[in-house]
Image 1 (tube, rainbow, N blue to C red):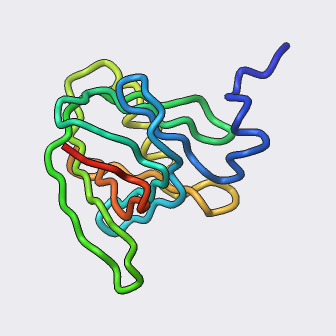
Image 2: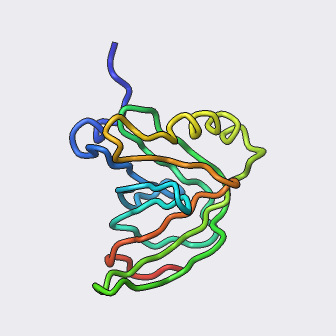
Length: 139
């Protein structure tokens, strides 16, 4: 039987997660930490506050799709000049998708075998932070 895992997860991800919002490619999730439910993404593209579908393609597991809305955008800069965007994404806890994935989110909270990727669900919010300089504009 053919493996149904995303092809990219076998070779290119290597502990990284691809993030897609509303069906558009937005970047690679490179790290997730428990403190603040942070997800590090590079090559993030334009995102508007009305986006409501976030898809995370994780290595060695099926993709996760969450429905909700972007709640806040915060901009800061590191001393080295790196631009950081913190995005609060609140997903619909009443949706079938959340019920389906909430247990899975908690299951993978301990991280992958390599320990490089961890997804955490806390207070029905996923906070995406430390985005790369390539962002042109965030509405």
